[in-house]
Length: 320
Image 1 (tube, rainbow, N blue to C red):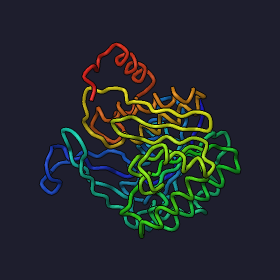
Image 2 (tube, rainbow, N blue to C red; image 1 turned 30 degrees about the vertical axis):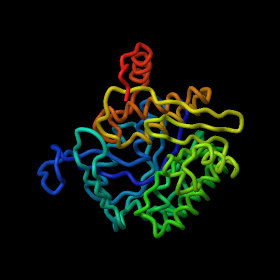
Image 3 (cartoon, rainbow, N blue to C red; image 1 turned 135 degrees about the horizontal axis):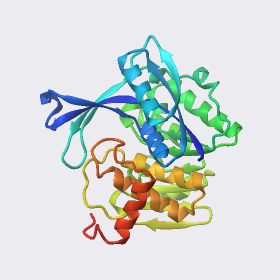
Image 4 (cartoon, one colour; image 1 turned 60 degrees about the vertical axis):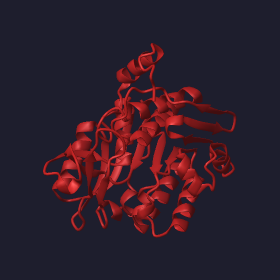
């Protein structure tokens, strides 16, 4: 199957074993997390090769991540860093909805990923580079690396997809965030903003205006994520709203956007019709939030097909 390249900051996530305030929890379960890692895992489960580029501390958490990437089957291009630590996060256990997450990543190894680190990344045989708005927010070094990755992808004939994945707290100010992320978006083929992200980046929460803003910059296709309402997609030849497939429960909302990106990217790589691609994206986002964890709900092909059969048979008639 087709190959995608991703880069960013994989993190060790310590998830509380019981609900409650993090300061009161005594026991945690260790897992792998990170937006770009989630997408890589989702692509692998749909039988697409993924190469992941990052910088990790030469420490216990870095070795854990390296082992987890290998176990998932992800080809990793890892720069070992003896001077900086591997980032991690603490996450609440919730019975439903949005958990609180605390990040410990300032001055982490991944925040020092620089253009020189990625000069020998092999782009041959790959078809798509996936970029998020997190690396350019981490430091000036990772910001420059983001632009260099896109440039190298273009030089190698790759398509580029972009999920803004706003993290306002990581940026020096909102003005810089908006300018840099829009500069990145306009270098890409496919842009996947959320409706609230569009309000900050494109000046409107109207999905059609958001799509029009990026299409006018030369982007080939824009899909605006509308949460429970589904999504709005517009390309140079098509435009349509699509409702979410119904779901019986919401356990953990983290990773829904990453699942959506998995659906879009895999559909593009497989040459699916655009409507079918977005239908898959909505479905994978819905499946992800049925389970606890950042990537545990991302389906393989068999699970995805089963979900579509359940929806067709009316198994989720109550919806959400």
